Image (cartoon, rainbow, N blue to C red):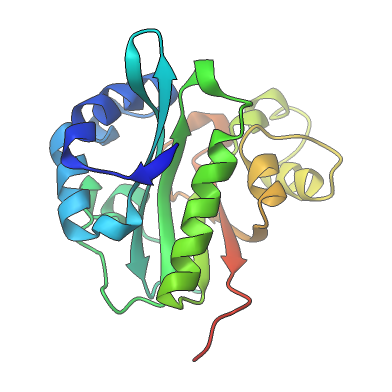
Length: 209
């Protein structure tokens, strides 16, 4: 079940961060305080996935978003953690024309159950409800580390888009309607992709100026 994130979910979400993003610097894991700030700043843009387990209802996934007018078209690329207000979403623009997805996570034990797709669908519906131009994401390329000696990160991304290779993150995003716009070197601190992120977009076909 996907619902809007509430304050009572924040502690569990902070715990899930370290499980889902083990290669991310601990300094950039969202804390419970950050999650609460996100809920306070843009409540309609935060979603959590809940599952019934033997131990009761468990937080098994989530996505965090905010509104922005930044489209990353120039050469001056910001650093991810600064761009998202150091986790507190202080860069949220209430009149922003795009929904930016700062992250989407699913507990490893609950993957391949359609949870990620349901979280993406919640974001799609939010974009339509707010009449935004669409969604933007600075995505990861975790599979590149297996091909680093064989090709550049740009060639790897191109081959994933072409369907010649499968990436754990980008392939799922493409299947959910995103398209690759460009690469963002230095946008993230992730040695798996040589600190390069993908800029992907999913436009709103129902957008009305």
